[in-house]
Amino acid sequence: MVDAYLREHFLVADAFAAQCGIAADELDALIGRGLAPAPAYEVDERGDMHSFVFGAIAAPGAPAGRWFHPATVNWVTKARHAFDRHGDDAAAALETGFRDNYRQALLDIHAAQGPIPGLSTADGHFDRDAFDAQFPALWRHFLAGTFGVCVARPVDEAHIAEKETVQARLTQLTANGTRRDFTASEKIVARALVERYATLSLPFSPAEYGRSSRKRLIEDMLPYFAA
Image (cartoon, rainbow, N blue to C red; front, side):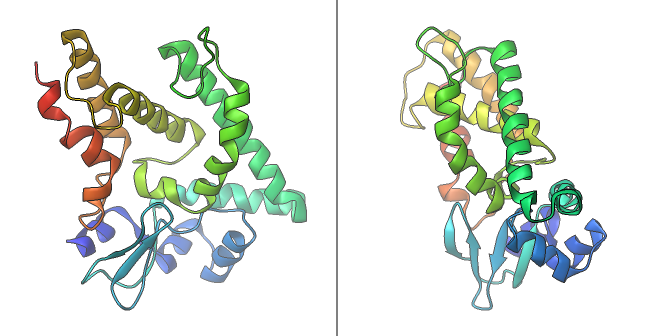
C-alpha cells in the first residue's frame, strides 16, 4: 500500500531531477547548500520510511529511494536561479524571499478570512512578532521537505500558507482533536474547514496516517461535526 501511495504522489530522485531538467548530482548539490527542499521521504533498504515530521516508520514493501513531491520542481528552479544570481549568498536571498512572500500570504489570508490562530494580537491585528518567532522553524520544515509530505500542491508560499492556516483554525476549534461538544454554528464552520483542508492536504501514506493531522482533525472529528 505504501508502494502504491509513493508511486502515485511522488517521484523517485532520478525521475524528479529529470523533471527539473537537471542531473541528480546537481539536485543533491542544491539540497546540500540549503537552496532546495530535501525529499519528502527517504526509504532505506530495510523498508523504513523517513521524513522530518514523522521520523522513521516501518513501511514493509516500500521501494527504497528518495521521494520528492512533483510540485516542488518550482523550488528547484528558484534555487538554480538564485545560485546563478547570488552565488554563495543564494541561501540567504532565498530565505528572505520565502519569508517576505509567506508573510504577505498570511497578511492576505488575515485580511480576507480574519485573525489566524497563533498569529494575531489581542485586538485582532496580524502579529508580526509572533511571525518572526515562528519563521525559523517554518524555514527548517521547508528545507527538510515537510511541505512535500503534507501539502497537496506546495508550488508556492501562498499554497503552503493556506493549508497551514486552515490546519491552525481546525486545531484551535477542536482543541487539537480532543474537543467533543460543538454548537450548531461551530459545526457549520468546522465542516467548511474540513472540506477545505481535505483539498489542501495530501492523504498521507498508510504507514503514517494514524499519526497524521488528517486523521486527528478530520476522520476522528467528523462524527462530532455532524449536523
